Length: 275
Image 1: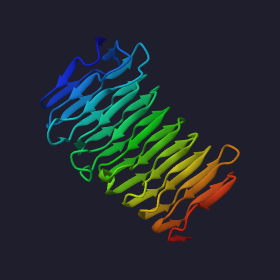
Image 2 (image 1 turned 90 degrees about the vertical axis):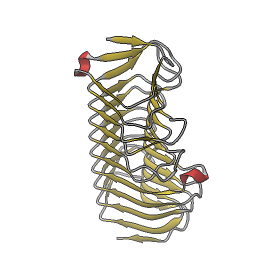
Image 3 (image 1 turned 30 degrees about the horizontal axis):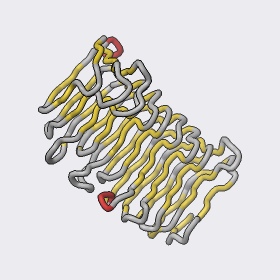
Image 4 (image 1 turned 180 degrees about the horizontal axis):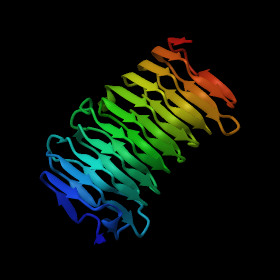
C-alpha cells in the first residue's frame, strides 16, 4: 500500500503503471487537490490498482489530464478500482482514451469527466464493462465520439449527464448501448445542449430502473437522436420514461415502458418519429 499527498505526482511523459490488483493500493492523505497530474501528450496506461482516500475528499481528482499544449492521446485504465474520491478521472484535454473493467464507488462529485478544451470535437473515447455508484457517473462537457457500452450505473443523481454549456460543446456522436441504469434521483441519462448544437446520439438496448426520468433532454439544438430497444421500469412515484425537449430528427421506437407515472413527455416541439 502506497500513501501519497495530493499535488505531489506529475506525469510528464508516457508511462505504464501495472499493479497486482487489490494488493496494490494507492491512498491519498489529502482532502483536496489532484493526486496524479498528467501533463504528457503521450499515453498513460494504468491497470490493476486501487485508489482510495482517507480523509474524505472535497475537491480534485485521482487523475487529471491537462497538458499545457495540445492534448493527451490514447491513455487507458484497465481493471482499476476508484473509491471514496471527489472526482476519479478528469479528462480536461484528452482523446482516444479507454476505460475498461473499472469500478467507481463512493465519489462525491463525478466518476469520469469527459472534455477536450484543446479541440471540442476530438474524442472517440470508450467506457466499457465498468460499474458506477453515487454522484454523477459520467459528465460530458465536450469531446465527440464517446461510446459507453456494457456498464452498470447504480444510484446517484445521474448515470450520464451531457452538459454542453459553452460553444466548445459544438460536437457530435454519442453511443450509449447495452448498459443498466438503476434509480438515479434526477435522470438515468440527461442531455442538456443549452442550445448549442449536438447531433448523432444513439441510445439503444439499455435497461432503466427509473426514479426520476429515464432519459431527459433539454435545449433546442439536439438533432439526430435515436432511442430504440430500451426497457424503462418505474420504481418511484412521478417517474417518467422519456422527458424530451426541442430538436430535430428524433427516432423513438420499440421501447418497453412499465410501472411509470408517465411514459413519454414532449416539453417542447421536437420533430420526432415515434413508433
